[in-house]
Image (cartoon, rainbow, N blue to C red; front, side):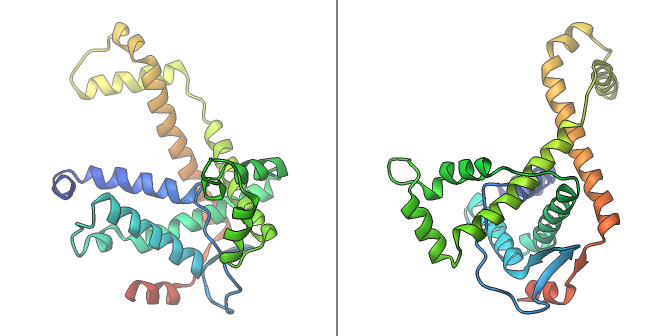
Length: 244
């Protein structure tokens, strides 16, 4: 795998995209314990805060992911080249920006959605695969959380996920868009447009083009939020973390 990365840098880009999506999505809730000291934050966006614990937990999970993916056989400077510290912070800043925007737009998640997420969470299921209230309460207690604080955190995660999907769903790809894309694709390969091949690949092209445009729309939206809300980064603490 390491040789593959050195030979094909695109592999790194694909991995980075997959990891970033995984860690800013729902399903991997981080435990928050206690109150942090004044100024002990990684970033602030309006009324939302990225705590140092959130940042450190996300960074650790990313590091563990890469280590497991490459079976611990990473070059010494691999993480540095990936700029994983910045990537971890960026993923959390994006999440908070989307949360601020979602709340501003009145996006809400119902109690039934939270209940479903909890009962379907594998962490809270017993050996038979059924939700265990005792296990749920025990895990929360061991992490210094109450059901109320955990469910509020989960509500934020689900709200962000819902809003992110709303942005993506706003992207509409027409048949003409696909034809233009396919024509350019064939032209770059020195091949003529084939109506028969276009029809055969229509569904595949629709999925590919839609996914690409959705990610571009989301990225553009987040960049606009950064200009609007101007996240405040605690550079001193971030630098200390990077040096440790």
